[in-house]
Length: 92
Image (tube, rainbow, N blue to C red; front, side, top):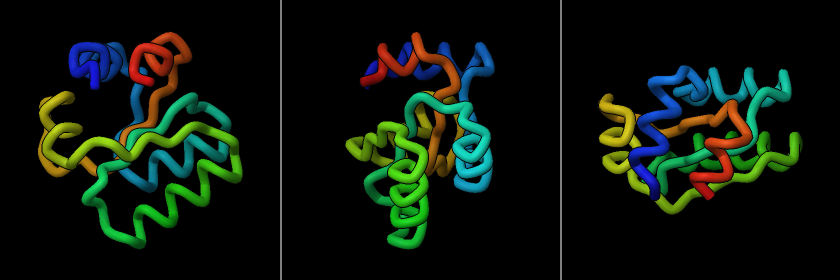
């Protein structure tokens, strides 16, 4: 993962953090990419996976909660949505 790009996207306010916020942003068609922690709960994984398929947004599940959390400087982050096409390309 390009932690620098994810951190920069966060600082630039081009991210949405948290399952509820990500689902809401997917419904509004605001996201280009969703990062989901590989160690998230099965319920969260299913919910986010189903929504990304419905709205045809790419989902990446290669990172742990610790990796996602440290990239944005927060704790216990399970889901991050990327609202900018440029940042989404850097993170794929």
